[in-house]
View 1 (cartoon, rainbow, N blue to C red):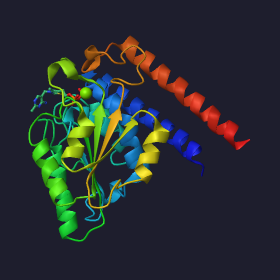
View 2: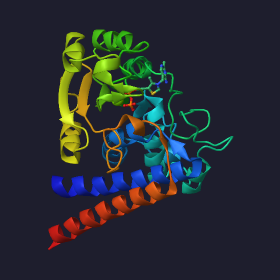
View 3: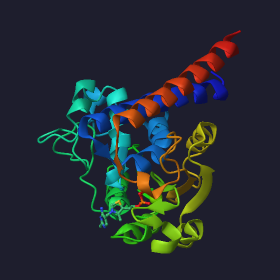
Length: 288
Ligand SMILES: Cc1ncc(C[n+]2csc(CCOP(=O)(O)OP(=O)(O)O)c2C)c(N)n1
Ligand SMILES: [Mg+2]
């Protein structure tokens, strides 16, 4: 299959996952849509293209691991896991309800496919470094993928994990920074910036590259190249747009957490359907 065709198919998947997110937000009335939608193209590509993982066998010791360090982006992971049949789609309608398997931050004790409880920011890289080191010690071939946020980067034990990963040559570890420029209360550059992020990882001994994290062809291209350097962990700095795919919410701090109206939810769905129809048309034209 051509790369272009593969990319379009994955873009359709990502839009379906966005629709799942809208379904959850309708059920709960609100949710962290901004960070979910900046990261969801990447998360969809990981689950549908790169990772060796199966919802029916989600504890297989040889599986690739996915760590959502920025746990508030969990709508992206839930949307993808539902699309990949890790759980029944009806569960999406329980979002925001007491006892739901898909709470506001991911819970490994509740939901099939969640590897760690995250939401207290700043610990995904160190948890993942531990998993990657265990993989090396056990001589397993699995890889560990992390999604972290640009606002999250200064927090917690992230840089302790980064140092450990480089020292022990964990080239089975890949960190994607969802670099959307915004965090909870405004621009990351004003609140607590880690720019230049690429230099920081490089100085810690990582192999680093930068892509447009909402461009499926660029995502696929980088996934083919992993690890970027043998013997080094990889950091992929992904330039993204917060709330990507919501015409009325893109790049706005107000859409970090969205108290949604039915009118705008319908508009969001219409926008997704329109994009899917356009992508399907492109696929049809490629067949001819
Ligand atoms: C330890 C900790 N401090 C603060 C928060 C509150 N908080 C939730 S989301 C967020 C912003 C994170 O920004 P970023 O990583 O850029 O993610 P984005 O908002 O872009 O999805 C903050 C500070 C938290 N969840 N955990
Ligand atoms: Mg951010």
